[in-house]
Image 1: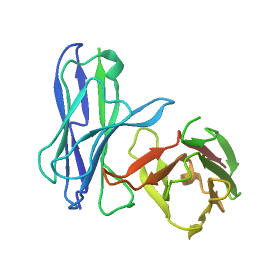
Image 2: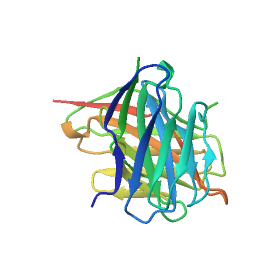
Image 3: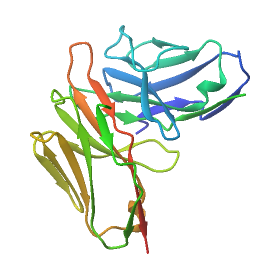
Length: 112
Length: 112
């Protein structure tokens, strides 16, 4: 069972570079989420997609864009990376209403 | 005030002892709750779902007190492997997509 798969696992960017974090789930879940986690800050929601074709801003959307390509895939794009975006990024998905989240392994991003 | 608050700890627990800690939530509309376990720099993993007054799974017991708006987690017969950060999550079901709010986590260190 793959569950939620994120790529890449690690990435180092220079300020101003762009990149896309990929996320795919094979559980036929409707909802998908992107979180970032910084030391001492807990998990903060960047964007989420309640269903295929919809996306909404979370708590900290500035500097990010997302695409819900299909039911399986939800990507997160940094158009112009900044050192403040150095973080661990987690993708998650959930199925039916009020079901728990299933997380990917995370992407550790460093912006220099 | 944060929507979901946790004592960050750490709770230093002798092996074999019982430890309990709470998570308070401010939004009475929160409908379901989850406890996740997170090991250092890894993805959160679901420990327990709480949809009504409580839940028990082996050495772990969660209790929900809606009147006082808190949820507790109790770990009996603590093992060294229980050392982790425990995240509390509150969920509100919305038409536009469930809103899940994470607490900052409670760190537990079980020592020999």
